[in-house]
Image 1 (cartoon, rainbow, N blue to C red):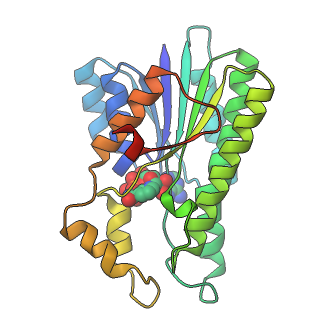
Image 2 (cartoon, helix red, strand yellow):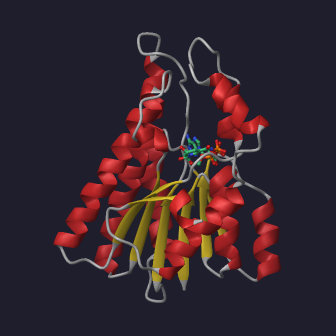
Amino acid sequence: MKYAIITGSSRGLGEAIAKRMLEEKVKVIGVARSENEEFKMLAKQLGGEYHFYPCNLASTTEIRSVFHEISELTFNEQTEQVYLINNAGMIEPIETAGQLDDHAIATNVQVNLTAPIQISNLILKNASESKTPLTIVNVTSGAAERPVHGWSLYCSTKAGINMFTKTTGLELENQQSQMKVIGYSPGIMDTEMQSTIRSSSEEAFAELDTFKGYKEKGMLRTPTVVANALVLLMLEGKVDNGKIYYVNDLI
Ligand SMILES: NC(=O)c1ccc[n+]([C@@H]2O[C@H](COP(=O)([O-])OP(=O)(O)OC[C@H]3O[C@@H](n4cnc5c(N)ncnc54)[C@H](OP(=O)(O)O)[C@@H]3O)[C@@H](O)[C@H]2O)c1
């Protein structure tokens, strides 16, 4: 039995990864605040297995209890492989430093950085204790590597997740572990996150016209294409610990 634990499974890239995993006969555990109702029917049609755990990743307490339950389901003697895809993310607040709201700062750091670290830590521990092969994918962004006017939180948290991925990858290599952790930079995709970006103000976000142009010129990839590239990489199993993979190099 193989399991894929996918955060942000309700829409966008997470939804597309979950669908593809079900098609590949991997049991899917979706995590988000809202449930995507399509999955129950899809799992039935494909003869697969799908579980949904509602969780607000802005709460460390909720994460602890929900991922404890998920671990009880996932780590057992029949489990051959677990994939953890830390995909959930948020772009807001889109605002220049000096104008940021305290609560919005804390939420962005929690959802984009603290949550994937907390979840990786918990799942690594359980996989190690039960000797279950594990591959973790942290979904990152090109914004981790270049400053974007108006995205100081998003750029910083994605840069943080890249460094967490590289450091954890180094530790796993030094421990000669069979467990893997990689990053995945998905490029620009036609999802709700891009609608949020296009609805921001020019004052707060200097590249507004460029991003509107991506949509108008059809330059945004579908999440399905981006998810398929990642799932193929994961199922092939030959990944380098700590490496950030770029969708453009995979398709
Ligand atoms: N779209 C792009 O062009 C692009 C580019 C580079 C990187 N990325 C990265 O790709 C990943 C997926 O993005 P996307 O474009 O698919 O975004 P999206 O369409 O906005 O979906 C975001 C997902 O994250 C979940 N989420 C957000 N806040 C949450 C919270 N507090 N608790 C639990 N779940 C939460 C949402 O579920 P609920 O609302 O149901 O909770 C949703 O399923 C993100 O990490 C993003 O940074 C996207």
